[in-house]
Structures are given as structure tokens and as C-alpha cells.
Length: 408
Ligand code: C6P
Image 1: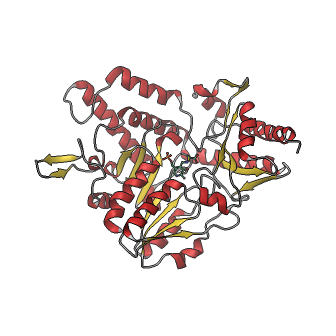
Image 2: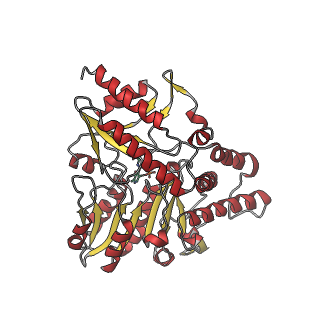
């Protein structure tokens, strides 16, 4: 089954509008995706029909809200192949999920002299929390390098994974290069020396099948807003035995079992990590986003994005003075970062905006990587299930127009 893109587009009301007089071409999906009607409706329905706090009331509205909230958790459990729904913790986004691990598991397990291994293609969200932790504990950070083609030099793990390595924190898909990393092989190597592995799934979970049991990763972090869901909701997956041992991240309502004047005991998983009234509406919205993706099939989503990336590379390669970053002849995520001789990426993005085309320009929260690529910034076009080849043609035409504007 192939995706019916024109049918899919009808589910996304935002796409049907003019920007500066031109039909919107939304190519900033790696930053955040658009939302289908079903997700928007799920949120409206919650607020208009059964808005109530969860896990507290015995009244009907509270029971309904609790049911829907916990049902979303089960949908997400199945979506990523987790063993139990207790392993799914709701947080705000990928960033919060990683911080949660750094400030709980990390505080517990990282000590002076330990090493945390990252890669050169990490987003700031998978660097800065580890920098803070390492500085606090007197641990050190090491980085698995990338090749000139924008792929991890996996063989270097044999040197970089040492008996001091406690954690490897790695992205499954680069938000700058589009590289898809061989996580399973990397997890096996890290586990063989006793290190835990955190996978940043911000760019992978929305775009490809991800099965945590198959990957055997210890932690997986991802955001709802990049996978058709609302903003303000994200997920931390962790193996049950690890979550059991981790101390809570925040204290307050819902995460406790018993409280006395002196001390408290903790609720069962996963609520031990969900202090206070959670983001009920957006959890329900995320559940609906998962339904939408399941109906399409993640294999199909991945195949379509591979096709789009290949098509875009073929078109963009023909533009003189344009440099594409990341693997060129391998299946890669549906995003392309590029620079154009003589025009700053921000100027490209501004000119494209005038044509109704939304792309992102900058370091994409991966400043060290962008510097390593020898660029101050890149322009990035990122695709999703509603992107058409015609939109990629428009992107290329507008880049040619930008060259004309700059007399290049
Ligand atoms: N990257 C981009 O335009 P949050 O902001 O917490 O939802 O996601 C953070 C994050 C973590 N890891 C990776 C690989 C990411 O790509 C992102 C978000 C966006 O590339 C916003 S900077």
C-alpha cells in the first residue's frame, strides 16, 4: 500500500491557506509537524465534553478523562513496542525526557571519573543535560565522531566505549544530516561493556517504525508535536527495572503513595514520575495522532520519506553552488540541510517565505555539528506524510529565484 498523499492533505486544515499570496508549502516538519483534524477534534472534544482532573475524582467526567488518558499510554506502549504501559512516562517533550533521566538516573549512577559517550550529531537537548551532569559530578563527556559523509564512525566505539562509560546517549536520526543510525548494533556494543543506552527518538519515532524491545535500548525520548500530536506533550520510555530504581524527578500530587509530616513514599510506575496535574488534553491528542500514524503504517511513512529525500537530493544536486549535508546515496530521513554559495541561509529562508515556503535556517540546535560541517548555519527543508514532489519542485524553483535576487 502506498500513501494517498492528496487524501492525507485533506485531513490537515492548516495546509489550505495562502502565505504572502502563495499556497503554503510547509517544509519545516523536523521543527514541528502539522496536526490532522482528528487530533484537533480529540482536544476540542476533551474540553467540550469531559474535561476533569484524572486519578482523583470518582465522578463520571473524571473517570472518562482518566480512561482516555491511560488509553493513550497503552497506544503509545504498543506504538513503540514496550513490554508494559508502566514503562511509558508522560513529559513535556524530548528535552524534558532527557533531563529527567540526567537528573534522576544520572544523579544516582554517574560519579567522578565516569564517562558519558555522546555523538557529534547530537541536538543540544542530548548534550546540555549531560554537560550539566558531568560538570556537577566530575565526569567527562566523549563524542563518537562522524565521517565526512555525515555518518557515525561506529568502529570507533571499540576505542571510545571503556570500562568507565556508564551511558551512551545517541540520536536515532539526525535533525541536521538526516542520517539514520544503526541503533541496535550500537546498543549491543554498549551493553557488552555494561553501559546503558539512551536513544533520542525526536526525529525517528515520527518517521519510522521504532521497537524498543528490538532495539533493546534502556531509554527512549520523543516529542508528540513532531508526530502529528500537540505541543507540550512528550514521552520517556525506560525499562521497568530501571524506572523502579530511579528516584522521582519532581515531588507533588499524584506521584506519592503516603505522605506524613516528615516523609513520603512513592506511587507505582509510571505515576511516580508524573507529579501534579498532567497535560491531559494533549496526552489524549497524542493518542489520536498515534491512531492516525498506525492507520497509515510506519513502514509506509518511512518508505515515502525515503522516496521524497531521494527525489529532493536529485533535484537540489542540479543547482549550482548548492551543498547538501548528510549521506547522499543511502536511505535517509526526509530532511535536507543545505547551503548555497553567496547567500546566507537566513536570506534563503526569507526569500522562500515570500513564496509561501516555510523552511528553517540556523544551526538547528546542533551548533557544534554545524561548525564541524564548516558552516555557520544551514537551510533545512524537512518533509512529512503530506509533502508532495510538486512542493519539492517549488522549493527548487524558489532557490533558483533566490539566486537571481542575489545576481548569482
Ligand atoms: N529539534 C528542530 O528543528 P523538543 O524541543 O524537546 O521537542 O525536541 C528536542 C529535540 C531533541 N532531539 C532532536 C534530534 C531534535 O531534532 C529535537 C528538536 C527541532 O530540529 C527543534 S530545535
